[in-house]
Image (cartoon, rainbow, N blue to C red; front, side, top):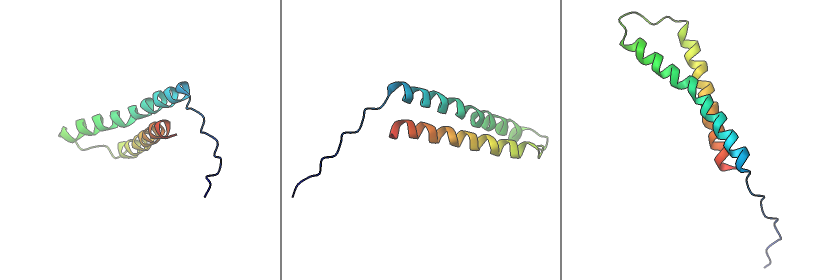
Length: 76
C-alpha cells in the first residue's frame, strides 16, 4: 500500500500569531472589567441597576470572542 504525496503544511507566521494573541488579550479586557463591576455591585448594599446586565452580557460575549481568537492563533 502506498501513501499519497501530501504537501507539507506551511509554517505558521510568528507575526500573525503574535497579532492574533495581542488582539485576543485586548478582547479579554471587557470581560475582566465586567467581573470586577459585578463583584463591586454584589458587595454593595444598593440594588444592581438592571441596565447594567445587558452590558455585562455583551462584555462576556466580547471576551468569549477573545478566547476563541487566542485558541485559533495557537491551533492553526
